[in-house]
Image 1 (tube, rainbow, N blue to C red):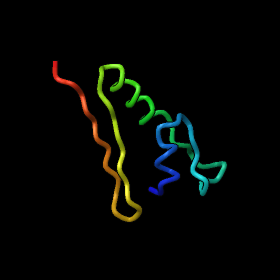
Image 2 (cartoon, rainbow, N blue to C red):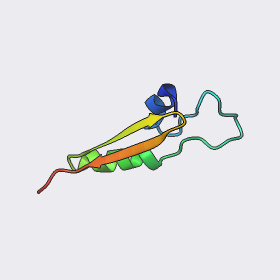
Image 3 (spheres, rainbow, N blue to C red):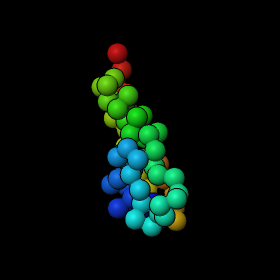
Image 4 (cartoon, rainbow, N blue to C red):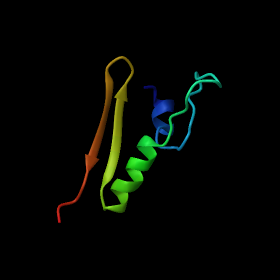
Length: 63
């Protein structure tokens, strides 16, 4: 995932610059997950390198 794609991954329905109009957008999965995690006092982060893979990390506080 490029830096530009990473910056938009948490925007609902964002499209990649290389994505064609008839292809699916990013959808609601990650934006909705981040909202849910933040509502519980945590955070969801994404780290990605093109050709290497993507890591999504979820941090929730202990109670």
